[in-house]
Length: 322
Image 1 (tube, rainbow, N blue to C red):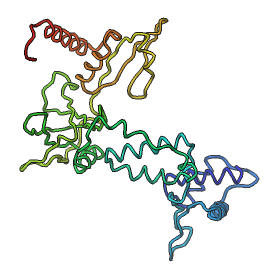
Image 2: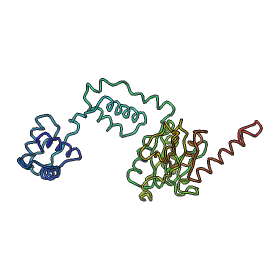
Image 3: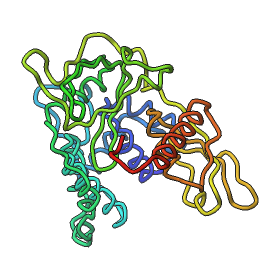
Image 4: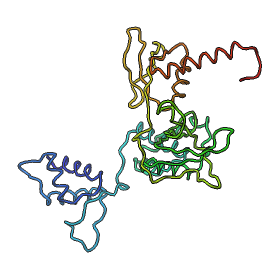
């Protein structure tokens, strides 16, 4: 392993966190060495001195401790983030989007963007994400989001106080949850074990973040000590045959869409992952004559019954909507 490769490997190892010199030596040896110039702790020390001279951001050694007992640690704020203009533009869009959503991760994203060399950042156009958010009003309480994220991150059940549209606030016990952005709003998708439903998926619920409400007796979000029963919100796949004209827009999306079969005419059988049955039904109906749902049976039945109810309403005499 020549000096250039060895030093790059050293930097990549330290990106994961601080390492003592002996640990660096052990991990570099697993990557292969040079029999004529075997690795040693002395050679690693020499490499670090060279990298410091080049301006690579190692944290300074502390006072009063032997150097061999101190870990090498990169100061990532001093490292440039090499990114092409396209990659930098994607990160810039993420920063703008997270700012509009008031997500706490925006600070970390912004620190990453600031490490991209100035001449790359100055070449970028203004982010377009503002157009995406005009359909919604993310006027939720940041404290609600913070509590939900804490419950999700720690894998704890939560008790939520939520105000459904045009109804009084209700209390929901949540076993497992996830945050998702949909139709201009930030939602919590959650499994509610005490909710009514014939299957685990029918006991999933959606909560729009701007409708959480604290009451005199209950906080908007209470993170409980009880661990969740599920690693993820229970999800299911529904399978749909898509016409050739619509299938062209469907590609494989990890953890979301699988292309199962493709016919000679270009039509496709796809499997789509969903957590909320009603969303699956609405999605299938939105495809109109361009799609035919195959399974599971409960989605097929719900699509058929929805179409029958719609046909009944259209066939009835004009009057107030039911």
